[in-house]
Image (cartoon, rainbow, N blue to C red; front, side, top):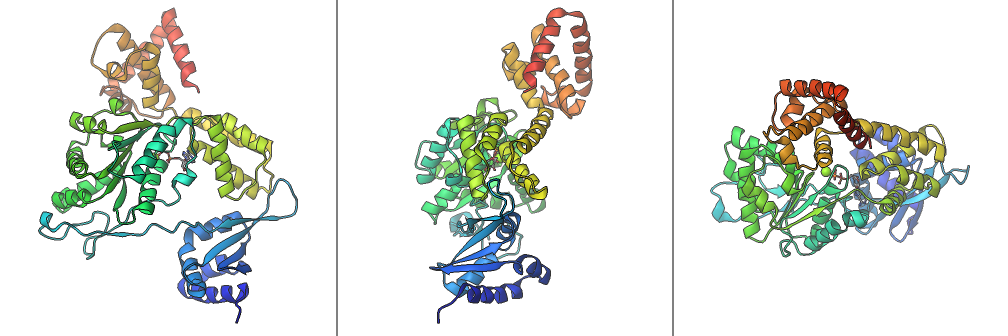
Length: 476
Ligand code: ADP
Ligand code: MG
């Protein structure tokens, strides 16, 4: 008997219905219409983009299982998504989007070298009590190389990342340190390397961990369970270790020690380490020298803000993946005005899609303008103390360490006071926190600095110029 799309979908529904809540079923599955069955691919029509995303995010597993039961393991799911707002037509259009064809990352079974351990190693990622040690890679399969657009701004990092992924531990890029400002793709690129390693070398154990999580796990291991050794052993048997936002190790000496031991063991054994940071190793603070010097062993690759061409490229790819059609002039407008980072670029796209969906508006230039305006305004408020210090040091042509040092040389004191003054004015940080970040001063010093700057700006013409010029540099 030849199966039709309706038959297959009806059987899937029976299976799904048994496995999810009645409300979920009613809301998300009843409105779906089966459209076509062709060569093991079932196409279903869903009422909106939002619907599609919700299904993919929440029900993709159960749908996959249902479909595999019906059509075998090569089954594929395709969506027809009704587009309510296509700028080119008033009639609802549909767009075809494949179900995320990347399977969720599988857990990895790991055998422990018996010599190291007397009892079972605890995996800090799982609740104690579970028997088998499975290591979830924590990788996001959507953060892959295919989705990471290449440009001048990321070429070095991207190609080094590729090289590492193709030969983990076997290049001189060990560790590979990816650094750069917020939203420029560090996390994405780090994941992409891991995802590609898993594609090429399924047997390698890859682990992604944020530094915050690492610190927390270390704390738990030591304080609560007193099993520092288990913690170290766990990390030392990873083949490709990715640690994100390593700058957060700053000031955490105990955790740095642990990381140092893990790093050495991995490096000696030809395992790959990938690190990301918001600063270049030379600018990292409160990180032990021996660790910093390790960071410099391999390659440090900076991610910079993408240029115009790359921004266009990223926008188009994003919209394509979202199944949304937007006129070129709107894309160009966004790319021209949102320059600082990719996260913002994506934020604008998300807003644009949401706004036009909710208000039934077209993707027009004027809508884009309103949204971009809002973003540009919001970014102005987001100047950080770090950024201010950088701008001020650069302005006076001194380095950051000097700005923060204890020196009482007049021009450096002034630079430091200006950094404090602008931090108070432009960020939401408290006096105490500003002081702590600018060379570990107390809040009284910052307060004094603010008063001094006010006074000098009113009485000293040169100084007034400093204030004005720095002010300009700080306002994007
Ligand atoms: P960071 O870790 O540097 O703060 P992320 O890796 O979180 O930045 O990137 C922010 C967003 O921008 C993510 O959604 C990421 O997918 C996207 N992104 C960054 N760089 C690129 C790129 N070159 N191509 C496509 N998307 C990118
Ligand atoms: Mg990140």
